[in-house]
Amino acid sequence: MKLARGVGVVVLLGLSSPALAQGNGQALETFVGSWKEDASKRAGAVSLRFPLRFQTNKAGVLEELRGPEASPTAQPVQFDSKPHVLPSGNTSTWKQIDAHTFEQVRSDAKGVVVSTRRLVISTDGNSLTEVTEARANDRTTTTKAVYGRAAGAGSGLIGRWEPTSLELNADLSLKIEVAGPNTVRFSGTGAPTYELVLDGEPRQSHGTATPAMQATTTSGRLLADSIEERVFRNNIEWSRSVYAVSADGKTMTVTVTNLGAGPTPQPSVFVFVRQ
Image (tube, rainbow, N blue to C red; front, side, top):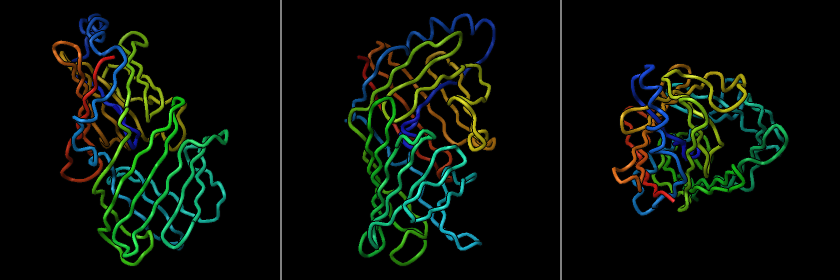
């Protein structure tokens, strides 16, 4: 489950063989349906967040390092209130509201806003609160993350910020459908709809590839009782998500491990109830 690729979707491990492929249709029916999260059983959600990393590059330009530690992407941060095209084809617009408050708006290639992100640094410069509103599938998902300064000094963004807490919408939903032979489709709050082929082969899963996304691939496989999804960036595994449905078919536990966040990743657990 990618609970917002920044919250993410999870999926599968198993042997890929003609016999398994023929039986997949029946096995996948276990997962098919509409699911709603029981937020009271959520655990370790903060582990989904990467540290925030801001630095000045060799040209003296402020930039943010995005994504996994081993393979980050550097994106310029220019406080000119103008849209700047990202390698993905989306645009990013930054503005500084005051000495401690910053805002970033991301829009797609058609100019439609897909997320608004506000960063507020505490007066002592040691903590940062990030509130993000993301829009997908005609829904808006709000997340609030708090970070502590781990490196850098002063009152500005430059430095490394480690996540300390994360609040997600309490009504996360997920829909799983069979999209074709050995293929499932995921949709829900916080992430675009996409399809996953369950053959263990890494491939693009989010529509047309762009230069920025060509380095990111996803593979899925089906086990006897679970689905696992693995996400890679530059051939380095970034995250792993596992879905497991209870014996009575009424609940589904999604375990997400953010492998790109550091050397000792802790899993996040989400429990969904069949609707």
